[in-house]
Every structure is written in structure tokens, then in C-alpha cells.
Image 1: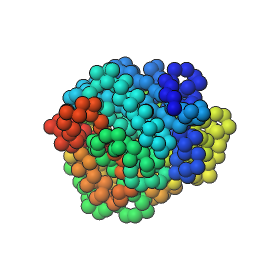
Image 2 (image 1 turned 45 degrees about the vertical axis):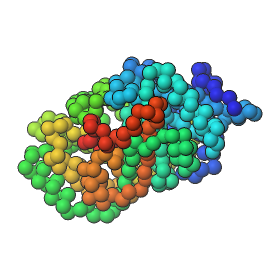
Image 3 (image 1 turned 180 degrees about the horizontal axis):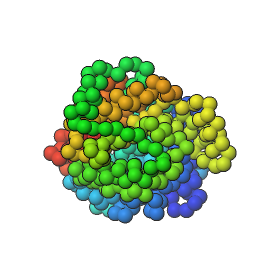
Image 4 (image 1 turned 180 degrees about the vertical axis):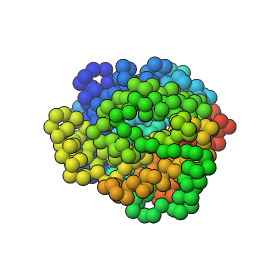
Length: 395
């Protein structure tokens, strides 16, 4: 077997090809857009390179056939959240072969050790955790947009190598036509009356206002919640809006205001994986036409709750109930039959209880693992650490 570092256009293409080869006959796999994966590893597009590095490898067998890939990366602000420093590994794909998998794991480990990291978390994304984060261990079915999918045997490969369960991530499915619980209806009505909270969904004509409001809420909320927080830039949201305008449903992205002050937001995206499965990662002219065709045919009937944010002073006031009351009333008249509420960590019992309370059913579980480079350093699960910086974060 031969491990090759990704350094040029040829190896970049091969990095993208690995999952397309491995999952060729898997009906549940949906290939992410090539442009999105390339963007994650582009220092000009990914802010995490400002204080970090990334490296990628592909793995070939003795006949030159692609059989695996992996990436290792770190951002110092995130790394310093832990003692010892925590690097990350992600985008792992491999045939069911211990020697091949361990060769990829070793490459990531040795590179991160050379960067003075003391452990590595995997599989993760070189970015925020709402996309491409965690190893699927339960719920092998089509995943929502941005949620990772992998073969069941990956769990054994990770655990045989020595990775340990750092935290579990749960995804809930909620059947839209089911009635919204009356208890949460009353909470939502009370919040609107007692707290003076009003709600408004986005519209593209005022996109700059909503971008500014989202950045304000996000940065204030996450600065309090995450010691590894990297402030969001308006350009990031602007770029997402631009790229996703053709599929965004304006009535699925909501803001809450207190006397015109932005207080919270909740973002739900149509599950475009239902149409991305038809284009195998390539967004060329003909595939764009194909996407528009499937969209017009009503191929999207699922949605995914992607990200939310509440300013600290407005937390624990029932604003989330207001969002869901409005959303479930709207969704009754839309083509979506199911919403995926993902993901919530095992360190966040309040949000787990909330999703169960509104009728969510646990459908999938991913695990984020940690591997300690020095076996003499004790392993501590995330929820048992003294500083739980994501305790109130619903992602």
C-alpha cells in the first residue's frame, strides 16, 4: 500500500473520488458537492486556516487502486480549549481493512504530534460542527444535508485503533403532520405576550439586514458558549445565501426580536441531499438543470434544522417554543413531511428533552471520538470536563 499526500490537482481529484468509488453501490450514500469539500481545504475560503493548518492523504493498494483517504487539521484557538492540545482528523474513508485504516490513522496522528498536539478528535470537520461531524453508528439511512454517512464497520476500525467515545450526538426525526404539543403552544403564546417577543422570517430583499442580525446573534451567543469560538464574518453568511438562494425557503429561516433588537434565530434548510444524490458531487451546467428539474417535481419532502442561536440574556425564556409553533403551522401547508432535528450532544440534556417534548423520535446517533497520544494522560469524556463550553449549544 502507498500513502500519498495531496499536493496537486491530480491528487485533489483523487481525494474526491475515494468515497465515490467505495460507496458506488450503497443506496444511502449521497456525495457532497466537490466544490464544498474543496472549499474546506482552501486557505482563501476557510477562516480556520488563519490560525491553523490542514493536510490530506490518499491511500492506494499495490495495484494503484484508490482504497482510502484521510485529512488532519488543527486550529490553535480550538486546540487550546483542551489540555493537552487537541488536533482533529476527518474525511476518513477506507476499505474494510485494519492495516489500511491504521496506516491512515497513523499518518494523521504523527502529523498532529509534530504540531505539538496531544490528542486528536475524529471524525470532525475543519470548521463548525453543524456539518461533517461524528461517526454514524446508529440509523444507517439517507442522511440529511451536511450530516456524515459511513459504513457500519468504521466503528470497529476506530475502536480497535484505540479511539474512545468523547461524546454522542443524537438526531431526531419529527413527522410534520402530527399535532404540535399543546404545552409548547401555551409556552409560545406566553413568551410572545409576557416577553414581547416578535418573530419574522427572512426575505432576500432585506438580506443584508438579516445577515447583520444573524452575525450579531451568533457572535454574542457563541462567544459566551464556546471557548474555541471563531467569530462569524458577514461575508460567510452572504456566501451561503448566494450559493443556496435557489433552494432556500424563506419561511424556514426565522428571527426573534425584542423591541426590534435581534434576540435569536433558527435556520432550517430543505434537505437538498434528496436531489444531490442525482449528480454525484459535480455542479456543472447540466447537473444544475437536473437539480432544478427535481426541485420542480417536488423531490424534496424533508428538511433539516441546521443551526440556531440565542443571545445569552434571552436564553431560557421559551423562544424556541415560539419558533417551532410558527414552523409547524407553516409546514402543514408545505411539501415537507419530516424534519430532522440534528444534532444534539449527550452533554446537552435540556435540548434533548426539548426535542423529545415536541415529538421528536431518536433516529440516528453519531459519535465523536478522541485518541490520546500519551496513554498515561487520562481520558475524560466531554460532558465530565469541568468546563462544558457547549452546555447550552444545540449543535
